[in-house]
Every structure is written in structure tokens, then in C-alpha cells.
Length: 195
Image (cartoon, rainbow, N blue to C red; front, side, top):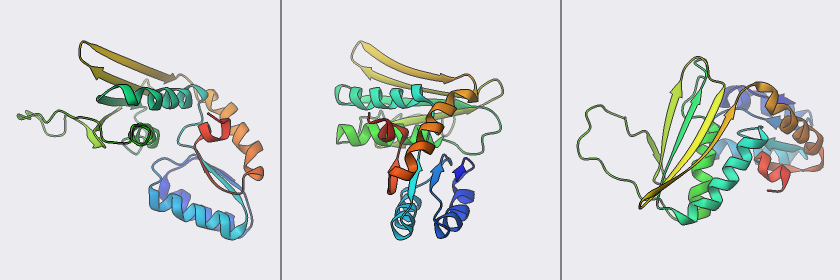
């Protein structure tokens, strides 16, 4: 089963597929740790493979890997993500995965300036482990992720833009080919690719 909706729909469909012994490639946005644990349990109980990938674009997973490697060298970082106006969740599941991956690789929270005066609530974005996350939803975008690191006298930006949905197919096909050979839960296209 290949599923690309959202977390709630995914978690309704997954038990039905698992009970029938069907391997799953899931790109649903916003799966949380509890839901991933549930998918892991299902996969083991039914002897199936489940691949969950927050993003199937090869360039996007390379961005994530580079950001995780750079995380050790910077104390400040923000993630800016933009998607089409029809995306129903914010922030994107992939931006959450980037933030969590950087925090995990770094081994501690990032520094985050605590602004004293807020002229408009929530303009600093969300915060995961000191990583600020900013979301935009507007026409003219497919998907955009940018990681901006800051240090004294410099910034480093790593950016990926999805220009069309066709960029997802090589990653999806790779996962479809691999899922039957990977019992249990595998998280991230980067894991499938061995990055």
C-alpha cells in the first residue's frame, strides 16, 4: 500500500493493510512518535515491512543529511518551509523531521533568542529543541525547505525547492522496491538510501 494523505487517515488505513499482510510505504504528513510506535508494533506483529518517509524527494533528504552534519558547528538555526495553499498541516512533517534530526545529531538543544517585545503573537514561529520553524502556505509553491544556521559574523543556508511532484517518484519507487525486504519499521528515505 502506498499512502500519502495525513496522519489520521493513515492510522485508519494502516491496521487494515497490516491485518492483510500488506507492506506499506507511507508519506502521510505529521505522524508523531506514538503513531510511529504503533506502526512499528503492527509491522512486527504481522511480519510486514513499513517505510515511513516525511519526504520522497532525493534533494530534500540530502538537505536533511547536510543540515544534520552542520548542526554540530552552529548554536542557532531556523527552518523555513513553504507549501501550496491546500496543504492542511503546519509545520510540514518534513520540517519537523529536519528539526528533530538536527537536535538529535547535535545531542543538545540549540540556542534561541528570547525576544522581550512581541508586536504580533507567534511571529517567531514554533520551537523544537531550540530550532525555530516558520511555515508559509500560498499559491505558486509546491514545497520549499530552507535551513538557516547563524554564528558570529556569518550564516549558512541550505535550501531545497520542489518544482513539481514528479521529483518524488524516484524515491517512492525505491521504497516500493525495498519495503518487502525490510521487515519492521523503517523511517526516512535517507535510511533506505543508506545516507
